[in-house]
Length: 348
Ligand SMILES: O=C(COP(=O)(O)O)[C@H](O)[C@H](O)COP(=O)(O)O
Image 1 (cartoon, rainbow, N blue to C red):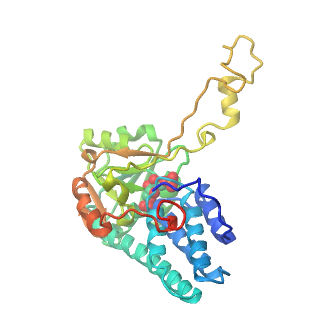
Image 2 (image 1 turned 180 degrees about the horizontal axis):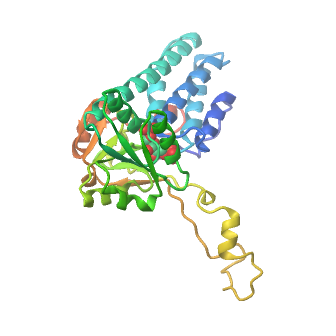
Image 3 (image 1 turned 120 degrees about the vertical axis):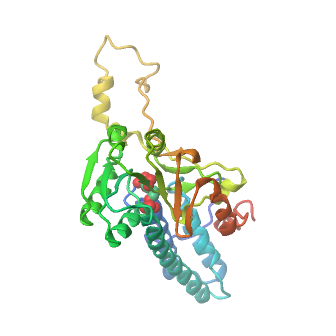
């Protein structure tokens, strides 16, 4: 699924609104796998609507360029390339007007389906939650929240233990939305999760990608939580629409884990408190002028092996992780080529 950055840039105009959406995704003003997919489809529709291309070939190349711009923002949530692929495969027609119409209606269809899938998934996931259950959440997942919302609509009382989720504290978004739904929330720091698992009936998380072997790629900290939950006997439920299934993993590819800026973990002033400002002559000399000897790593996601997951809940039903590959084959076949690479990279 790699983009071929050695290809020469063609003179293609990407609508400013598309560049803005790409920036919002990269900077996490738009975040979460389903929300990213929705925004990407919307951006392609905007590109189609605002295109001033005079020929079908120019129109197609603009749409592909817009897709590449969106694709290059964040690497882990497969819902992004899946959304781009879906919309571009619906770009059909002999004239610019036909191409515009087919692309915008395909994007609208995608966005409707996404919303419907989340609602259906929520109803299926809600069946796993009993009246009075306590769920522990990690990060902020609209798919996971859909399960809780559906359980509430069924008249069940649900409570939540919400992990803060350092460094970006997406747990605060989860806590706010659960409170808006009237769910009693206990907010904890990530390090308190094992202690509070004794009070939880389920761990409920979302996913950015699901691999063919049933591994779940989600916010960093999910795998440790799942291991602890297994040790405590608390079932781990992953709420993930089929847009999260990663087709390339069927042919042996791994999912790229995004490494984000170290300043999310350690701002400059806090770094200075650790390494000093260079005026302490007794400090160990640095290896070179730029190296203060302190490395900060900030992986945004991790991989939870299937043996630590009890169920993956999709809009097509719930699956033990090991059998998710059958659904992947049914939905994707074996194709993994990217329509936005045509005319540039390996498909030229
Ligand atoms: O890991 C995250 C978000 O990470 P980030 O905040 O870095 O984007 C979410 O659990 C999944 O994306 C699922 O979310 P949803 O169910 O809404 O698709």
